[in-house]
Length: 149
Image (cartoon, rainbow, N blue to C red):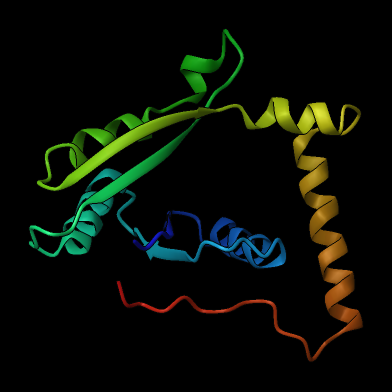
C-alpha cells in the first residue's frame, strides 16, 4: 500500500508556502503538487485518480478530502463545496472511493494560540523560517517527490 498527499495548484504562492511547511514539519507522507491552471480542481482530481488506478483491477484508490468548516452564518458563503465536487467525480471512477472529513482548522489554532489570529501566526512562522534560512544559506529544505505512482 502506498500513501501520498496531493495538492492541486491554483495559487503558486500558496503552493510553495505549503511545500515549505510540509518539508519543515517533516511530514512522513510525500506531497505531490499538481498544476491546475484552469482552476477546475474536480476535473483535475478525477484525471489524477484515473491515472493512479491505471485501469488495473488490482488497484484501489481511496481519496480523503478535508473540508474546512466555518462558523455560522458565514459557513455557507465561505465554503465553495470543492470537496463535494471532487467526491462526485471520484465516486464515478471504477476502483475509486472518496470520503469527506470535516476539519475545523481555525478552532484548533485558536485553542492552541488564543491571542493570535491564524494569519498573524502564519506570517510569524514565515518570518522565523526566513531568518533560519538566512542563518544556514547552504541548507535545502525542499525535496522533490518522485513522480512514480
